Length: 448
Ligand SMILES: Cc1ncc(COP(=O)(O)O)c(C=O)c1O
Image (cartoon, rainbow, N blue to C red; front, side, top):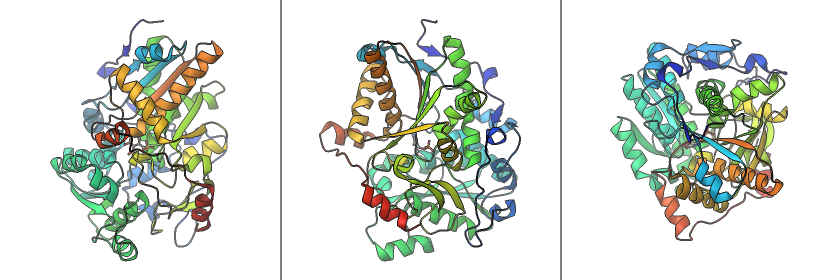
């Protein structure tokens, strides 16, 4: 085993394909349904929103999909991302466990989101689309797409959840710097937004509302398409560069993970790291795989697996997924990127099949782990990513109790440089725990 703390790859080792688990599933997924007719969706149904090449990826039977050269050229700006062994954190925890983390915060936007923003902008540009509309929660996805559109000479419109718009002015300025226009959602720019504002003028917004606005914007403008930063199969596919690189780097470290962990909002950083390992499991030998979500938005741990809309205004197709109900109004907890009512249908399916596990944490223990990490490893994590740190720390503490080494790998999906107001709240004792109650879940699900 190597004594190194940092495992790097050469440009020539950056994956040149995305790996697709769809053809390896032991049971096929239930298809998405048309929101009007409720018939299984056809590729043509999605054309008002997405270019055909992305639609094909959404349903692709191919196990490997080549990454286009122009996308590779941009990936090389920051990929391959580093894998670290958290030796100082291990020491603090006095654990025999070996903790590794794949750090996606080295991208220009500061998270894993550009891994899919870049190919999405690329395929839209090739289809002759001039502008992309999207939503953003924490601001990470909006920044990633703003960057990608800028690099391909496209326009970008971002509907940013009101509470994040107010909490994170610098994320907004980052998007402006990369040339995007940004509206606080709910906004006056769409029918969906005006409807919410009429009913609740001081609405803090939600990802579900912002998605409705972006989808409406795209569907009502011929030169504009919609881009989603998580949930859909093609997004999971693009993110598999994370897990493919991590496998090479773990090989360099001379170790195999026993457990693989990622925080879970819609599932893309988690899926990106986990899906290459899911293929190992499906072939008979692979690690435990754990998704970590906030107790304030417990989609996988308290939601129901059923058909639901991806947005509040019921404009999107019906997806078979774990959901808290499309009109779920999340509390304004700080991990803005983990406040989505639904989940990736692919990862929902794998959870149902027992291939992955899910757990939830309240935000105070999450921030406690974030601080331990920042004070030992140096990197100030995004509050979303800190959920994965919490779970990794608990696995390491369990290893200490059992007196047994175990190899833990987690995804550190982004840095928290634009989340310092959350850190301030935590450090000044103002951050409160919130757990979404059972009766709230029942009420939200009754609306499905
Ligand atoms: C740093 C970071 N991690 C994780 C997430 C959650 O998204 P996903 O579950 O798609 O990875 C977000 C979303 O904005 C994010 O900004």
